[in-house]
Image (cartoon, rainbow, N blue to C red; front, side, top):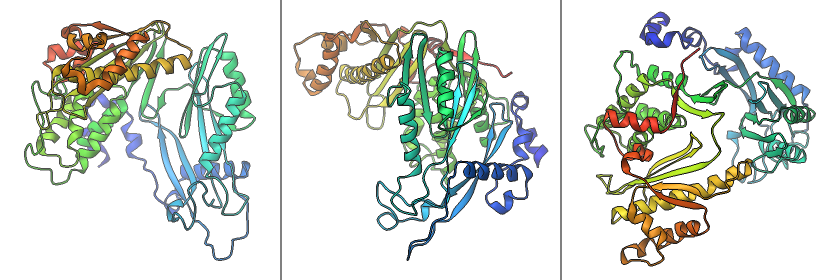
Length: 501
């Protein structure tokens, strides 16, 4: 069965992903199963040693009439970007799902089991070093009256980094050598910046409060492959994409030149309904996450995600076409140039009356920081627009809102925008309304959006500029295109192509 499955893997992927390693290992579902494997035995021993070192538990008397909370082992195989095994991870966790709100715990306080473990990892992308922190908090006060461990951990971490001069919430600190940024996500945190001396001091300070472990330079994070070279950083999800193709079983060499056929409009009840929509929903959910590095599929993924409740065979065929397009462009991703300017610029567009079911329009925008694409969106508007001007202006208001937020974020990260941000729109009527204080009859129903956009034009936050539709990069987020036009629009997004090592 193992060799048969490998034969189903496309030949150009076998060298890139270590399928044999993955197929010969699986994650145990019980302690009994894991205890027979030396690798999992070692992982469990490391977990217990870490808990013991951090004094994560203490024996306490059980209050009268109360039952102890059980615990269980959770096992996870951590892989590298090429699919090979990085490490075996075992955690001992409390069975909190056995509790009832109002009986066993209240909103801000929770009972604590005999073992409560919280871990965090720190990756340093600037100097090539990585560290991980391990901290276990709470347990000695019995079962009641203690804050939840993750919340307690974050409070301690937040107070620690703010005491080191970092701004709260975003965790940034500006020095003479540059800005240091901490990005925290559940079990991982990335440290990035150009001040290597301050970063080294930060890691030393954190190690006095948390147990540290060097994880090496950042290459793989939350399914994202990070490829660094002197020209900048490339983000792609080739491994994630290949896993999707393997899941569906697309083993032939057929690919698609675009993710959606030209002039194709999907509608409900398009063909017989799927008897089991589980796979469709799983694939669409995975494709939504894939748009993190693949803006070229944003529009079609936004389209197929509208039929999650009752997908039909026609919708599933559209998903398969997306996968065939991804098969031919597996190593495409986003590139962030190290020499690019830090000037923000944006593009706004709308496709009026685009949905054949409810006649709602689609809002689309994208923002570049220099030559690097950093934000984009394709979403159906909540109300039906009465004219193309209304649809464009509603899109302009949403884009302006994102623009204001990005300017605030960049300022907090040490890259303030001192001049008005250019925002291009291909609808002259919308531009005229934004600059004209006189409301016409047709614009009264969008008065709030008009005031919002004009306010930021007056404050010189935004500089509205016209652009022809042929040059509008957001056109890729509005509709399906012919292959030539689609390739031209993809080139405007400045996407990169990264090959495996």
